[in-house]
Length: 285
View 1: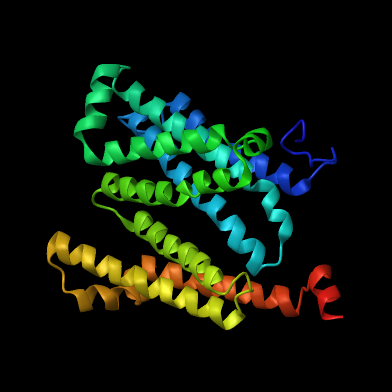
View 2 (view 1 turned 120 degrees about the vertical axis):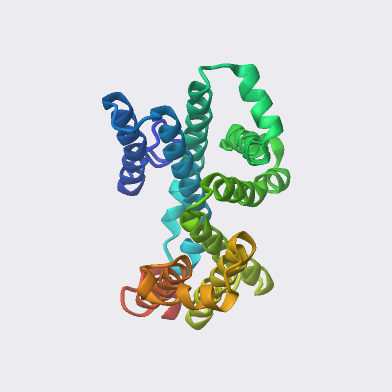
C-alpha cells in the first residue's frame, strides 16, 4: 500500500488520486469557514450538520459509481480512488454525527435517546455503524486476513447502507425532497447496472443498453416522485409525472436523472469509438 494517498502502489505520483484527494477536502473546508464566519444562519451547527451529511451521501454514491464507470468508460484507473472515496464518506459522516451532538450541546444522553426514538435517526445511525465496519476493513491487510470472499460479502453491505442513507436523507429533507429523489434515481441506475452485468456474466453492456438503463432510471424516478406526492399531498399521479418531464417547472428530478443517463451513454459512445483507449484498440486489432 502506498505511503501517501496521492501515490500509486509503486510510489509514483498519481495525478488522478491527487486531484480527487484535494477535491474531497473542499466541501468540508467551505463548511468550516462558513461555520467560523457565522454565515450559516441562526442555527449554524444544524446547517453544518446538514451540509456534511449531504456530502457524505454524495461521496458514498460516487464510490458506488467507480465500478460501473470503469466498465462503461473503459477507465480502469478509476479503481485507484474508490477506497479514498469510501474513507472520505466515513470522515464526513462522523463529522455529521459530531455536529449533531454539538447542536445538542454534547448532551450524549439526549442524543442517544433521539437516535432510539426517531426512526430516521435510527436508520441513519445503523448506516454509520455499517460504514464504520467497512472503513475498518478497507485495508489490504484486512482483506488478506478476512479472505477475499468474506471481505466481499461484508462490503456488499454498502448497498444496504446506501438505501438507509437515502431514506434518512429523504425523511430529514422534509419539504424539499428534490435531491433525495435524484439520489434514489441514481441508485436505481447503479443497481440496475450491477444486476444486468451479473446476468450478462461480466460482458460489457452495449451502448443501447446503457441508454435504455438511463431512460428507465428516469422513468422510475418520475414514478417514485409521483407516488410520494400522491401520498404526501394527494397530488394527481399523472400531473406529477407530466411535471417531471416538463421544463416549465424547472429541472425536476426525473429529467435530471434521465439527462445524466443519456450523458453516460454518450460518453461511453465517444469513449468506445472516438476517444478509444489503447486497451480497446489492442483488442480490436
